[in-house]
Image (cartoon, rainbow, N blue to C red; front, side):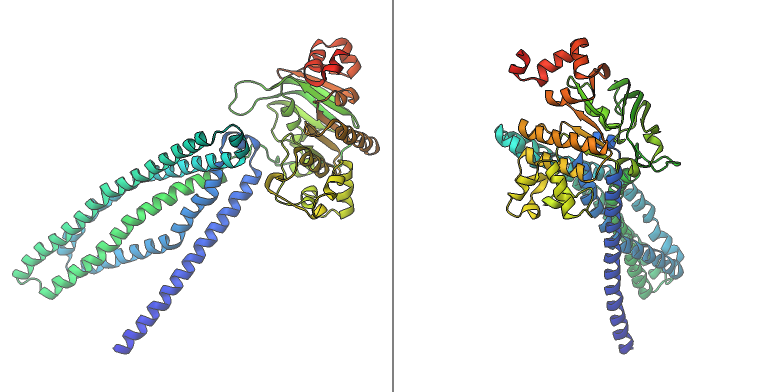
Length: 525
């Protein structure tokens, strides 16, 4: 018998180890899959989704929410299964020993169950609020880290500290509310559990006095009652973890199930190499949730090899117009066509692979200069990377860096000037050899001489390769040399033509030219 006990103890130790190891491995696997799926989904979500969701909330879902699910998926699931098996087994044994006494013991179970259901119904919304508030806190933190220079420049450290403290206090209040819900419910659970024990002693004691039950059977029954109450209490404590994991899983699946506003059509075809004729056919666009059209019935044609300059007043829809070409957004009405193909009828990958884009806000990534230039073509040779940098007038300053093209730049290009970052971004776009090039105020941070050199290179590349270029204009040199100028005003094309034509015929063009693009001396002339 002693040998069997030793063997059982060893077996229990082995299985306890395996249970802990396998449960933790499973939970880490769940977290790995969730993080991968979430990140993949976030990479493909439409731009309209990011227009209405805070980045801090997404970071919280990828980190804190996934961790809450992982915690329950590991030890929580095993403990819950263990509690259910023990509850069923001890209930069956109690009924087998004495069904009347068992019914007395089981009378407390519905009451405890009701208390736990009430607890879960109150705690789950609170956990969701906690995670949302944590997301707000992460949003404030992220904004301050990105804008630390602006904060210091305007001496707003105290204000931002107070703003962070305010959200932090809100998070503290939410957490304390959950603690109060725990404190207000679980004492009653223990109370009824103890009342169950009291009822067994009282009712079983009368049976012992009457000779219908032995003292040993009563002790055994009371011990089994403890085994039955323990899993009930375990389930009670786990209900908090279940509620927390449930709230976090709902937030995670809100992202995973978010609809893709811009996606490949079921019958989408591959866009063959284009000569790059661009047609806007009665295009109107309205941002999701807005009541006003940003673009209204815009129509024009850009022929292959043309440079199209876009200018207009602030908020006239310049950036929105060029964002519709690579389908960052889909038109509300009308159609955008490349070589006669509606951009909604071709695959996104084949469409965007033929378009080079340099955005107004330059984004570089941590890594070497070469990695940033070759971001769109990681397999590009060193010669191709250098050629693209030379075309963007970036080769000279890159070679002057400590390690040349192997220089590691900081997050968001920290350590480089605004003009240097813009030239790397232009080189990145040129390296993919696009048929269509979109420049959204991409040379605003470079000096006039460098811009002229970049423009001369682009003109040569366009003539040699017959590229079509859309450029949001900020300088008169860009406007003067464009083949087609579009003047936007409140979402419509107020005027179009060449520089000379618009000088003669368009009053609004002359106003914009004088107020936004010309220097005082040029304006006077």
